[in-house]
Image 1 (tube, helix red, strand yellow):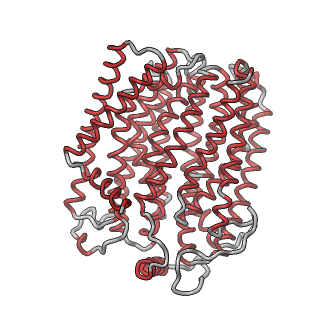
Image 2 (cartoon, helix red, strand yellow):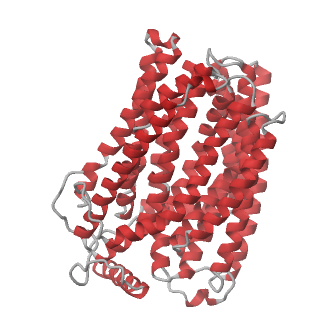
Image 3 (tube, helix red, strand yellow):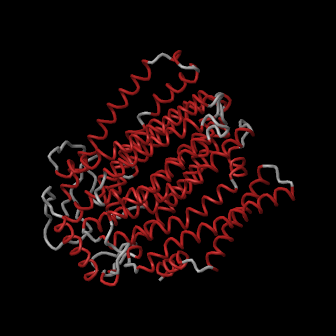
Length: 594
């Protein structure tokens, strides 16, 4: 990154900038937080923040654009390559840079840095912030560069003849050589996004993946119109180059916004910066936990390749996973990203009642959206899969297998969405060890379940069922540990009336009756979701059967009618039953309109 002169922090300060040090107490941090919030409220120096729900809506909208463009990318990928040998090799190769992205990009690094950057912002020392970001960028790029070189050396030293399908392994090796440097740019982009989120800038970091997807889509359209569409190996090489370019674009696009808020810094090596040590200390257990999960994800791909006979198992699982990621990003990721800075602030100020209230309300909202999304997607899994991935190179039997994977993944959608939020809660409380210990147990369960289920008639769908089983276990254990950790807050006390109100709607004090209402609210959403799923399935099936809708455009009509029916049924029943989540959304809309 290029050096830029320090710019004033938009957060007002009662005194001049004070350097962040390791000796800061929680009381100092809490005092600074309260003082700055009160000055903002009374003097109105800056415009009021949009709040967590508003930020979540911005992130959801940007994520929706990203998911739609990603869906277009996957549809074009299926049209070009179907479920063949080459696309299997590509998906396995692409899993490796994604592994590092989860580890050093949007996973451990962002989770470890956001609480540190939040305290830096409260203290107002922009020079220290630039030192921290510049050093992190340098260490990240250098470290990942070494990892890329060592990984490629190791892959190229292994003879292709050692593997059951030497041609597929040789293709995998070529694709990986192009794709692996992508991880450097995407992780630097995630570092930038975490910094911008701490300065309440969510839109650009959320929209850059959509821009990257559009680059990828452009490459695929070009391939479809070129003679390479009939040469899958060469076409995937060109596509891999497009993926690398998209990663570079995400890194470059966020630099102007970083410069505007004074966060753009040249690469440097300020190893004495206190926040650096704190970040690495927090990252270590998270990296271990994420490494276990991500290596397990890569192992799943290898197990599918090794234990399921024939080609296509990896592609079948990958296509279904992309559809699963669509609602997951709109629900769990968006709200969790917006909630993390707020929960970090409440935890730093020891305002655990507000922390608990925001956590419970967020979990309730996630369930309200994730349950119908899972039910609707499972009900329409086969027609949606056939509509999106049923190109000229797609086998109908493989489409059915991919649809079964999607049904199994839908079981885990609400589980994974809430689990993501609870993991952020642990990190905000600066407890990184508990999620790590739980991760080890659940990964072991997941691995055993996958090995068993892959050899059943479920085939690659067994991977999705194993994910649901281990995810449910992980969620149950996280709830139990958090309930113990937050004992004495509004979870089980009558202190709600003594807790001062906050400007953030999701963190309003809760009475015991409101706490007891949450399980009933989730049960209501589950029952209404089941009715909605049955209605959407009946409408789609009836329309397809009555009018004989078999073509691509006809299938689009019947699926669209099923989706619309599901939305109407769920929304109508939720309004009729006076679900509080609907009222909250309507109130937010009225407030934004005012």
